[in-house]
Amino acid sequence: MNNSTPSSKWFLVVKPRPQAEFRLFCFPYAGGSATAYSAWAELLPDNVELVAIQPPGRANRLGEALLTSVHDMADGVADAIGPWLDRPYMIYGHSLGSIVSFELLHSLRARGLPLPFRYFCGARRAPHVPPRIAPIHNYPLEEFKAELRTLNGTPEIILNNADLMDIFVPILRTDFKAAYNYRREPAIKLECEVSVFNGARDDKVLEEDMLGWQAHFARKVDFRTFPGGHFFMDENRSAVLDVICASVRRRSECVAA
Image (cartoon, rainbow, N blue to C red):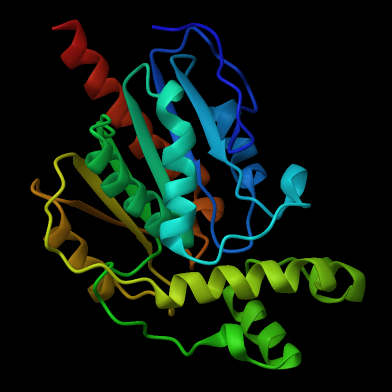
């Protein structure tokens, strides 16, 4: 195990744990940044180092061009992630982050790099299932803002501030378009353990939209429903992390045996 932390703008380590036995890579939702997972780092056990993905065009990468497709986002991470795979790892992706991280799995497989021992997917229909919602990225500004409010993922302080909206609207439109256009048919069954999470009150991604994830994996998928809406990962942070930590404990026991 390499105890030094690699350097790349793609990865943010809020709480470095160079001696950690495992890593957890977390991929943000549309419009989000790596800081969406800052609170998780404090709640994980000492043997897990959280590494949050920082897409270009936001936060410390604000001056960089936005990536316009899920494939480009996944390839960008795949190009940089090699040095970070020096220990067993997991991935959690939420909404857009689910499909970017899922596409990353295919990129890693194609490059002969190790897959995570467990992949966690939240709040996203299966990759081959057509969208249930309209292409809101094309909506006029006021209608777009109204749709953002229904998702409850954009703070009112941003929605009501014209200067902030000038920054965030291009990011959100680009991310939503990438998510809307993404498809992958289940031609390849990936070999890793999988958990698929959804929110009981998420009216944008229904439970039946999630079940198709099984077609993309060789092993039986663990489906879980949490209280809350599309952003249940914030509303039920402890419950979500309990499931993730249970996977860490099982893995540790297997390694010890």
